[in-house]
Length: 53
Image 1 (tube, rainbow, N blue to C red):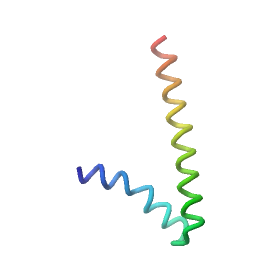
Image 2: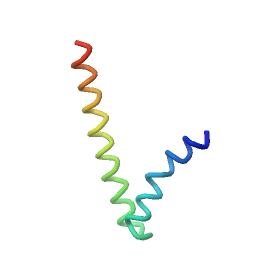
Image 3: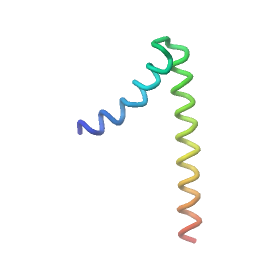
């Protein structure tokens, strides 16, 4: 449970550090991380779909 909490809070802490504590850049950093996550998940799903076929 503690490990899952750390993994969930790690991107938020990284965004705050990279945004230097200001809310605008931190939100922008979180949005970029989200876009990267969507791209990664969709590419993995495509690879799995292609591999199963």
